[in-house]
Length: 346
Image (tube, rainbow, N blue to C red; front, side, top):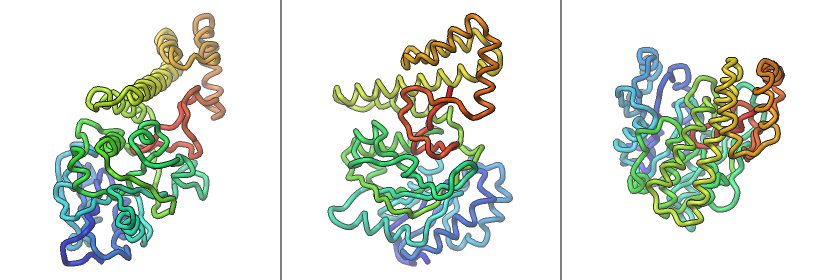
């Protein structure tokens, strides 16, 4: 149970369309073996507010409840951070769960030697089409030290519901960018790292992350667009050195090409052949793929055949990966605003 004294950790839970999930999430927090925490729940103008408030009613004497107009996930998390009293902030999505030793293990790692400003852990994955026993780090491994460069190149991929950070570190980085509705956490983690924060991860499984169709984190094309925008912002606002700028340009162009390719696929399925061909040509300026080139040629000489072949592949779920995507796609359907949009298929 939370301590009556000033908490060391503030748990921030943004909520939108979360009425069916919030009770198990809160139960997982209040089951923590670590004693010094407070819980801040931010209702971001959810359309299910009556049901949501009914669900949290038994917890009202144990949480700080903030209700605001719908302003997006960044604004919801910022509201919680600004209200927080703890030295550390732990983020938890409203449909995810912590194991009962989550805070204890995370805080031990943060406050041990050499000491860190930011840490994240692994989590089990649950959802449609997710193989049993799959974990986040198995799907999206973190490799090597957590640095600005490793985050930038997606060698280390952070899951928000497994993240604890010093509040001052978050404030110094400028909080979440409220103009972002996707990849807002990736943008913040980059700024935190660029400011020199000491960051680390532990491979211990300490949580359960639900992958739900229809959630903000389950829209791959929006995530691709968000990822591209993060790199555009980094190029425009951070004082990158030449090597970092080269990576940023490459990643911006890569995610932009994935957006164009996905748009081309959608246009092809709608029999908008000229637009589909233009999008795929734009994508292939980056990929230089023989397969995409073949589709472009087929769109020029026999568009209905190209559409029929694409639909046949899509219906069978047998489409090959797009070139140069470079992401492990071990958990079908998984995309997280903290992580990766996953590969686009042609």
